[in-house]
Image (cartoon, rainbow, N blue to C red; front, side, top):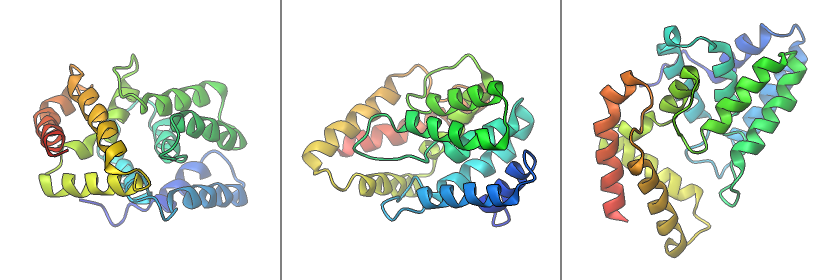
Length: 210
């Protein structure tokens, strides 16, 4: 359940405001993010998604070593989202670097944020525990009750509405099967124990429906 007090805009102002005193810059970067995530063709990858990830991150804060960097990655990981493109994560990571350089983050921080965003492309096991947990947060939706999962898959379908079923279904089947073929959908032990079984049931059910 969403925390009504956790507002992405306020979270951004608090986070970015610790790296710069330039409030105009903080507002400008937020405006850019808001424009990206508020596009009318965003049915799932929107600010609601960002809010959910920020809330999950907050609930798991003690498990992160680089909590601020993870939150920056959350804000930018789906900033660029074009159903026709195969390199959205690369573009989102590039946008993050261009934007966050203005906040005077160092190269090590920018590199980590880039790595984190790129990892959300294939959701494969990573050597960094923070990044593994971020990927688990991103896929948390897969383990929802069926009603919420069904809403999620319909939202994804709307985002790909320009594709007819003849093209969409094979592509969606491939993605679902790739997730099911992974040894573990969830990379951290805690999420694996809590959510793996439910996520696999939902994915298999959707796959069977296609």
